[in-house]
Length: 385
Image (cartoon, rainbow, N blue to C red; front, side):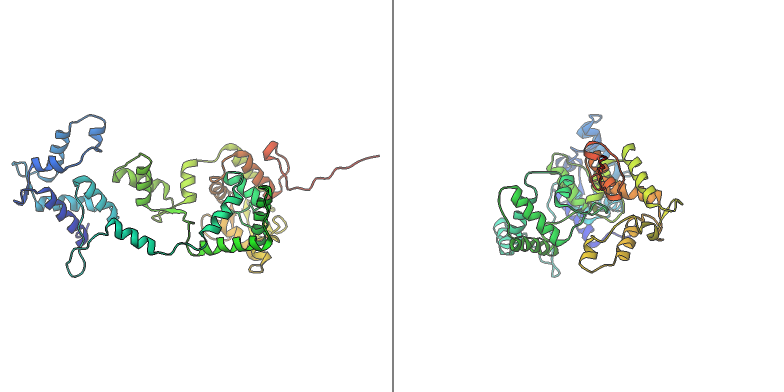
């Protein structure tokens, strides 16, 4: 477990000082009762114990040897030393202490002087001094164009005409500009080619500046977001939920991880379609997909990288194989890895019909009914006289 950090020891000592109102170096049960916030304790929530019983049990965890119902600073520090070892994030530990004991942590600078918090007026002045995103208005205009009329993510991909093979649908910059012009006409307006190009450039500049395109969640953000929606959780519950979603143990929940956790496993219908796609790609029928298998199956001449000259068709095919290669990066994709890849892709696709359309069109699999019918294959009508 190691020693407590200086920061956490400071937090613990400040909690003790806040509870010890008599300033005699001991905390009495009366002082514990006054300060201890146990409203989220499981026994309180299920009404299996009273507040007094929870407080006594809580006090007993610190003070096994003494019979006077009090604890000293050493008992208090030892207890939270044990608690601290199970909480890796300093912010989580501090939040727990402040929430449990109802005090505000005071911080000090290197010279030992108290660090004053900004007043609301000072905070507002600082926020006003930060320059706003100069591309914000253009980005809003783009959003107004491509989401008019409103549509879901699947409809947006179709509307933009983006490539649907990879987990991240893509399109060239000229295609994006053309889609904006089409959206303007659909809304009864007009958009010049020059203005469309300016809007595309503004979106790119905003993303490169780290504008409003944030697609990960920290543990603190998850906790705050759930609390904002009326679901306040204790530290242990937040840890359990965060661990469930954070599949790659990166300490962040990506958008795809969040969706995959909510969606659950793929349906049988989707699995059948993915198996059909794999059989199309696996030209040799050996259950393994390589770059050689992809040649002649996937036409990457329209890929954005090929169009702008930054990638060759061989580079694109190798990139696809590497993207599907979910396990060991050996340049070979098994059926299981292919299935895992499309499980991730499918997490962001609501309807089975659009998923079927995406698979059939991407791999030129004929068939389907209704909205899921293949629309990419060339159809020929023969007339006999």
